[in-house]
Structure formats: structure tokens, C-alpha cells
Image (tube, rainbow, N blue to C red; front, top):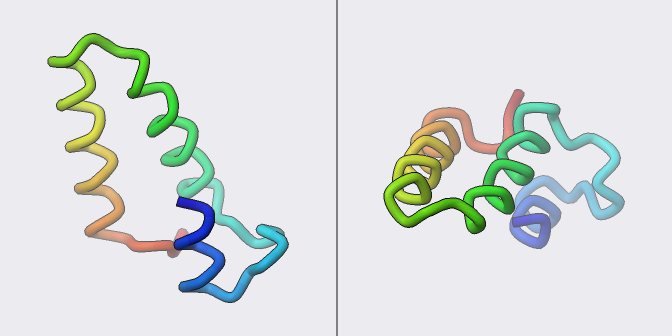
Amino acid sequence: MSKAYRKETDDKLLEHVPVRVQNLWEDFHIAHQLPLDAQILAFDRILTDFQSHGWSK
């Protein structure tokens, strides 16, 4: 995700990553450790949030 963020925003040093996006990255990594049914719900929530707001705050 950080490569995509850098490319899309030109924030090469990740100095201006909105807190919401940081939380989505963390949630994404945590979701991989959940049981499958919980993973599906977590990834759906993350994807829905990102589709609605993109890289913005």
C-alpha cells in the first residue's frame, strides 16, 4: 500500500500520510491474522473506506 500511496501522492518519504490512511494500513496488516470470516469483514470495511475517501483525510 505504501508504494501505491507514494506513487499517487508523490509523498516519497511518507511525511504527510493522513492518520486515517495510517490506521487503514495497520488494520490491513492485522486483518491477515484474523479467522477467515473476520478477514472478509475487515477487508470489506477497509476497501469500502478507501473507495469512499481514497488517500485523503
